[in-house]
Image (tube, rainbow, N blue to C red):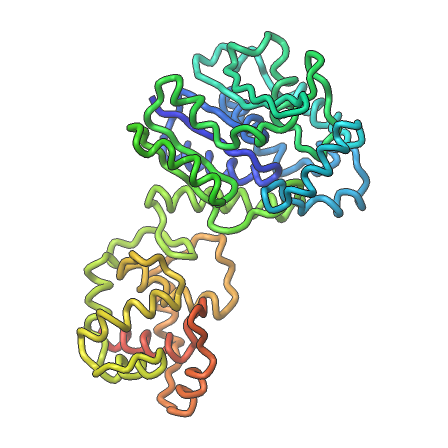
Amino acid sequence: MKGLVLEGGGTKGAYQIGAYKALRELGIEFQGVTGTSIGALNGAFIIQNDIEVMEDIWRNYDYTSFMNIDEDTYEKYKDLDFTAKNFNVVIELINKARKNEGIDITPLRKLLEENINEDAIRKSNKDFGIVTVHWDKKFNPHQLYIEDIPEGRLVDYLIASASLPIFKLEKLDDKLYLDGMFSDNIPVKLLVDKGYTDIVVIRLLDDFIGKMNLNKFNDKGINIKTIVPSEYLGGSLNKDKDNIEKNITLGYLDTMKAYERYEGVRYYFNLDYKYDENYCFEKFINLKDETIEGLCSTLGIKRAVSRRTLLENVIPRLGEVLNLQKDFSYKELFYAVYEQKLQENGINRISLYDFNKLVDTVHRNYKTSKDSEEINEVKSIIPVAKSKLPKVLTNQIISDFKNQG
């Protein structure tokens, strides 16, 4: 059985809308969904098959549809993150929430009561699980399946799962509930306990703790496909329209790339089978000696110009300068060189492009420089961890690529 796990993260959850739309477009279906906090709320809409309603809420409802707060308070807290590095702030907010001094989320309850179809969820024949935590001088975790939740109380438990410590907390059955993230923010175990061995996880963070929790399942025969945001998604309460739109689009693009429907390193390109690993390798291995010499000089590589130097020193150094993973491919390096041109021109990365058109455009407009003074000037400004190649280096490589035909 294939299951879907949705991580908690407040309004970062808009990312999961785009990601799920991509999964659905790819024809991937799930027999079970689990989620924590906003992941639980998104999961409920997915189970009841109301992705369009959920998307409408995300795109067209502002923060006043979720919280009773004034604009100044919203601006003060919208960029707050409920993570370990903000532990002291989180504890302070928990104490305020316990004293009933948190933000009123009556609008959220009303929104859920109007749009959550509990009956449809119960009759879906799909597994649905959420994570809750109640406070009694300590955290008491409770992982619940839909069958464990009393009928007519699903919205209550969804709100319990999503009770961020900044919110005014409501008692449920005389218990004070806090956000499920204080127990398990990535509830893979809820699906594993139901016998699922093929699981997709849509994350909202890219933190070490989350990775550690997922690694626990590596030796248990569980196949986990993880979709991770390629950039920071903003604060946990940021409902600004531009931030939501960006995150929905990013979720879609990241998912398509994760399933190899799109290509690219930082950017996103339609598949173009011309630029396979062999093609890209041939481009680099056939760089002229003059180009290799220029790269060695600029990158501080003091070895004789040769194919061996190119493979053993220059190529790894280029990957380092471009911040590629240590096991990068020639194709990734090739794409990264051309993506540099998009970065130099401030082109939005959260969009889909045609790589072949990019190559043609760059080749038509590239500029080269053999000015040794410019090369030396560039040498003086390249730090070891520079995230981009200087233009003169990019132009050297691209000029050589173009001349190869």
